[in-house]
Length: 169
Image (cartoon, rainbow, N blue to C red):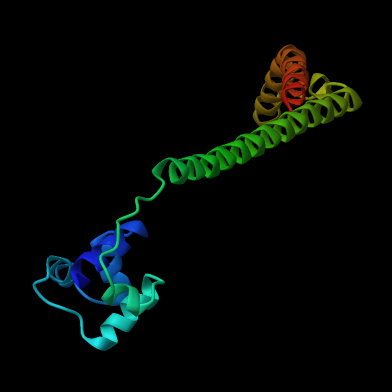
């Protein structure tokens, strides 16, 4: 009777033999022996079992207990709800991060454009007789040439991306 009650209450609480053993600081085989009726826990251990399983000792020593099944559907739905909330938070965080990255990219493009307008292509007046200034002039000219052609396309794409991201929120 004690063995059947321990097993029924353990299962009704949704614990495996291993989980109960860990909580009681015994090996799983000990739990198995108790549930098979091959051995019985001493009085101190019985009190500890009743505390861990939140069941009075008298219940363990009383009549046979009908095993109640854990409402698996409810447990699964609660876990899925938690997972869905976590996924929604991650998606929201990613969307906000992407939005700020796109805004930052727009700010960088505008800043570089303003700098290029203000300095008005200084490499055109450089002395290309010096190898250092010649290389630097070519690099600067290449950067400006690529930037002037690519920046408008990237800028328009980031503006569209910002509006699309804000539209989904």
